[in-house]
Image (cartoon, rainbow, N blue to C red; front, side, top):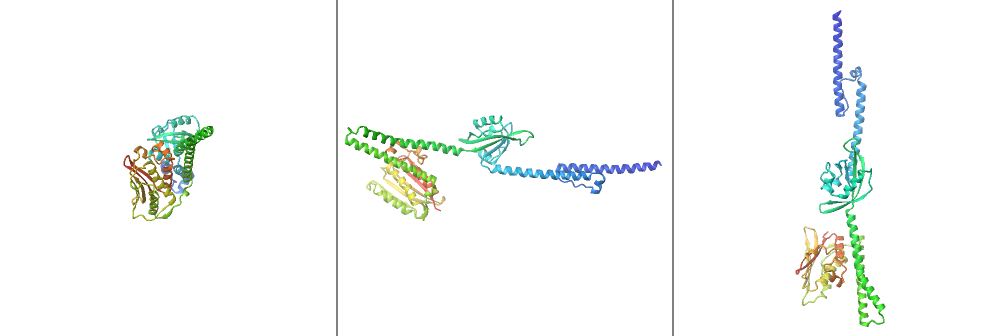
Amino acid sequence: MAWFIVIILCVISIALFRHILRLRRLLRELDGAVRSQRRLLPEESAKTLQKIGALGLVDSLNALIDSHNTASAQKSGYSNQVEAMLGAVQEAVIVFNEDRLIEYANRSAEKLFRAGQSIQGQRLEGVFRSLTLLELLDVAAKVERTEPTQIHIEQGSDTLWFEASCAKVKGLELKGAKSTLLVLHDITKLKALEVMRREFVANVSHELRTPLTIIKGFAETLIDDEATIDPKARHRFMNKILNNAERLHVLVEDLLTISRLESRPDQIEPIQQPFEPLLTEVAENYRARIDTDKQKITVSVDSAIAALSFDRYRINQVLDNFIENVFRYAPEFTELRLEAVIEATAGSLRCSIIDDGPGIPEKDLSHIFERFYRVDKGRSREKGGTGLGLSIVKHIVQLHGGTVAAESQVGQGTRMSFTLPLQ
């Protein structure tokens, strides 16, 4: 009887041992499935799992893993979409933590401040040089959201202007932590345009004030001293009034021309036509104004120049402006050359007006195409210049897709040139 009991105990022990082995194997498989986040495909059959009461557990675990994987895929897809959208916006977007370590920066931010290199993990103070930004961050640390504020950041030798705003967001790295979203909208160009507008208004006001003051002064004299003023003085005063009225007229016309060219590019009407006849015609128009015993005007045109597309009236205006400046500021020239050559590598025609007059100082060369800039301010006003002619030239040439340039050496003459694309 004892041996029978021993046999039964042995059978039970073996069955229990096998059952424990199955459970341990199943637990290992469960652990592996959870760690790798994949569905559990147990080695045991469904029948065996049912016997040990684990079939429901396996099904529940697989359902949980499927749900988790679906949620993770959705979250990953959403994150990728958000990152793609933030990467596509022009504004610089930066997320940083409470220690001001950058947790995220979009492509615009990296391109703007680090030439496309990653700035993640760096401190804000190491990336930006801006007291106004630091002041904004101090405010942002105390509130949930800041109002848009204009700040400036030093970038090398340049100063960049931004409209900046901050908002608290859920931390990207530590659970429960708070991060700050910083959005920087670049307004550097708007600031530059604002400065240009102020300077333009100031310059126009100054240019208008001088002739208006002269006209007013002489007109008041003519009225107040009508009975005593002698005829010669009256005639001289009337000439002064007429000359300054003409100066105002020219200034207003130039301002209107610039306004039209800037606001309506369709003011340019290019037509395919030869270039040499225009250059020859312009030269002939000015030969009557030179002393042929001491001065000459020559034309040189590259034989390879075929027809090209340009607005004849506007390019004539460019040539007239360049040549009038020679007659106005270098009347002692002995030779005035008009030449046109092909620049094959650039795919353009370069037209130059070259004189052997007194030249332009080097410090003025880079500014002569700016509005109201004059090399000799007093002499320019005496000669009737408005200071807008070369600015108009620049606008016309740029609307044709070309460029303007000036080369000069004091005492050796000046070369004023512009290019036109061949196609």
